[in-house]
Image (cartoon, rainbow, N blue to C red; front, side):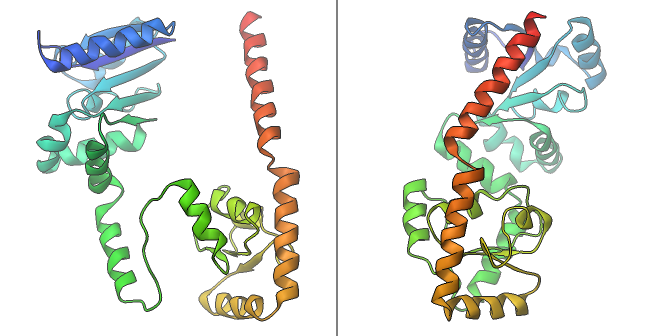
Length: 266
C-alpha cells in the first residue's frame, strides 16, 4: 500500500525521530511510506494534489492538529498518532480543539503512546457534555450504579451474577453485549429496535420492550416465571452456537481473505 505520513519534521526533534521510526516499521511490513513535513503544506488542496500525483491509497499523521487537520475530506482512509502537544496544549484552544474533534470523527484509528494519554483523549472527546449528563442522572436514580471499563473476565463474572442483561440502545448494528449474555446463559431484555430484533426473538431468545412501562412489565414477568427464564436462556445459548460461532467466524474471514488473494493475482 502507498501511504502518506505527515509529521512536523524539525531536525533532531522527538517528532522527527518518532516519525522516522514509524516509517521504518511500515516499510518493513512491505508498504511504501512517503514521509512529508506537515509544515510544507499550506492547505488541504495541496495535500489533495499530492495524493493524486503520488497515487496514494491511505495516510497517517503524527499530531492530531498539526498533521491530522490536513487529512479529512480527501477520500482515502487515515489514522492519527497523538502527540503530547495535542493533549497538553492544543486541546486548551477552542478552535483547535474543535478541529481535532472533527479529525477524530473521520480517523480509522488513533494511537496513544501511554495509558494516561489515552485517558486524556477519551475524557476530552468520548462527548464530555453527554458524559456529565449521564453521571448526574445516575446519581439521582436510586438503585442504578455507573461502572467504568473493566477487563473482559471481570465483566463476564459480573454478568453471570446478574438477573438479566438490559440493552436500552436506540440504535444498534449487532450488539456484542446481547450475544455475550446469551453465551453466558443470562436472560436478555432489549429495546425493540431493528438491530436488537434481528438477534432477539421475543419470548424465545429474549424479551423485547418498546417503552419503560413495557420494560417493567416484562422484567416482572421474567422474575416471576422460572420456566420462561430457563427457556430463554437455553434458546439464547443455542442461537449463539448456531449463528455466531467463533470458529465459524474465523473460518469465514479466512476464506474471504483467500478470495482477496486470488483476485489480486488476476
